[in-house]
Image (cartoon, rainbow, N blue to C red; front, top):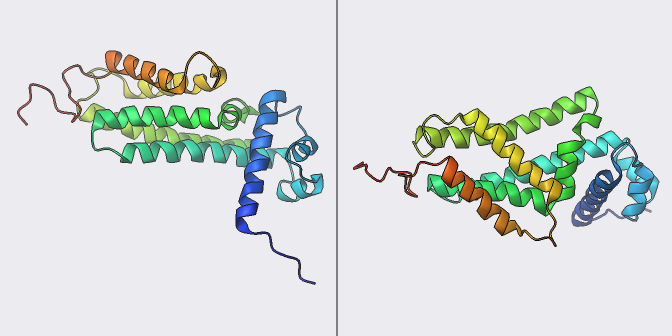
Length: 213
């Protein structure tokens, strides 16, 4: 008898369940203290079925981190492409990064704080993915500097490092039921950006107010 094939949609649902359960346990207990058996139990799967997919915890962690980087990259790229206004592009990209962090905060938390648990080869892969994402932000900020939207003298690399660091840290303390909503945090970050980084004489088209061009 030929075994029935599992529909692709169900396979995808199962994978999402495994990764979400693993992220929650890794965040709550730490990578080292979490076993594959516990992850299998958390998502209602037989341990053997999980071992078949992920022979080691590290393999599961790597897949989880790939998911995290892919999620935030897609969100920012879509946000950036949704407007031709350079100032609005930056605002949308910041909010997209923040939203991606907090929609799947367990995954992002693990990505930010458990990468040291990876072996050398796996760590190099994740660092490369991280660097690719950061290069996206480098391009965004350098373009704005070239357009004169960002204040003269602002160090683009330092702005990227400090900016992403501040945004990423929100994932460690954000509480969906807490005092600050996602919108309130985004508005506050944008106010800081507007006051401290953007030129005051640039309108939403990226053109200086006194320019005739």
